[in-house]
Length: 303
DNA sequence: CTTAGCCCCAACTAAGTCGA
DNA sequence: TCGACTTAGTTGGGGCTAAG
Image (tube, rainbow, N blue to C red; front, side):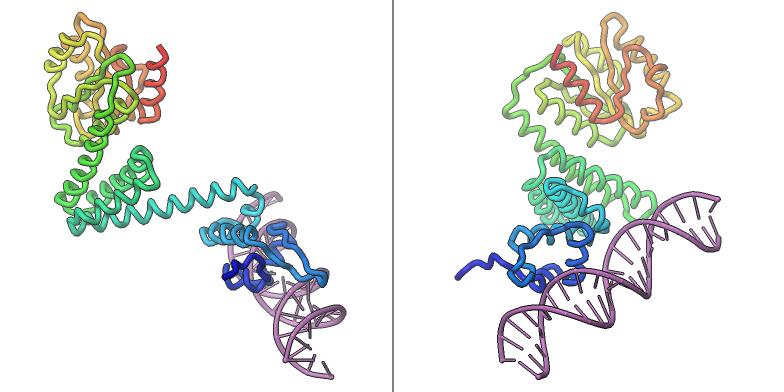
């Protein structure tokens, strides 16, 4: 069997569903393709032309203007196609994960997760799929579309995946950098996924961490500090402590936890977003997002 | 010689954008 | 918000060529 290497404009029309007329006008107006010609001026296309046209129509169907597509270089075109394809996959995965939530279907959840891992590392999976999923679920939960059992079910599964990845990172862990971090949640704070993910970031960046977990009163921190005087605490506030009591909380941290030692607390989470960094006590640092956390870790690595 | 397919050009239509 | 301009796709006509 011989492989077809030359195509007529009609072939391209059939393969791409773009009218031959339109292909000609795209060539004329935007120099989209540059086919060879026969002696009698008939267009003949190569496989490369076909591939390009299929990429162009893929983007075109996504709503990109033909004039914009035409301005892209070959590399830009390819990159954009890959990005859109990834978005497609992620959107599809989020739908599948929601379905798994409604059916309490572990199998579907795990299959979807494994599939995503073929094209994503855990970090991008977490941010491109899990975070949007959790945001959506937050909405559904507020509007009463789902009940708490669904929300718990999916959150626990996500938590498990973060934990598995922490464990994996711990297995070939070697502490490369100081200082040590201690992670905890304050009283009544129920959202643990964010903090777990922070733990994952720390360990995979070569920092040692002590994961204290939920419902940790401030005086427990004091005891940790006795063993590790240079430790940095990280906490994640999404519902607790309440915004109005935050200054009080920081005050108490300052006076009862780090009375004599020099210590610091990094705070993350939605409850902290409105805080003004300048008004915080000097031992307390607000970290707006994981991006900022990573750049701080980079700085620590260098020192 | 007819027919089908391709070429190019010009004109039309529809939708979107812009500026007074 | 209204008319002018821009963008993009379609339609049609006239001409050329190859095949039946």
